[in-house]
Image (cartoon, rainbow, N blue to C red; front, side):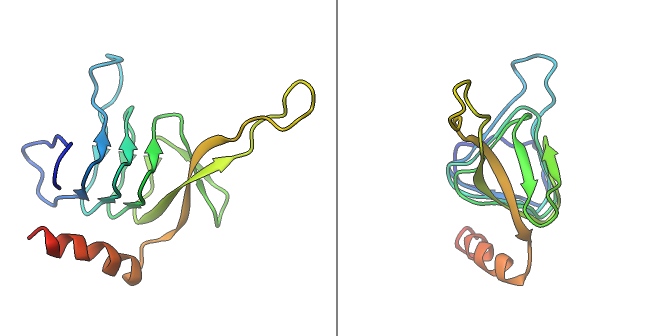
Length: 135
């Protein structure tokens, strides 16, 4: 981890991220905290907010924006997650088609996140270089 982050004092297995926004719980007061579990990699300029949980070993590519209502779609199964990135998922930014406008023309696309695969050795080798450079 480099900058733009806040971390609990009891973290043991550090996730890896730089230039990333991690949301807090100041507003709204009833919101859950963002939870980043162990061995997570978050790419540059990504944002995780509104109580989203990023589970163990997940990899978020650059520019992934996640809030409580962001749809996270598993490309293989079609399953939709909200508020949670499943363990060992590789996630990239994506879009969903918008609802048609009242005149029948296509509506604006909506941002989402897409699980493109599960973490494998190739993925770990790409993210491991960051760990080597930071030790």
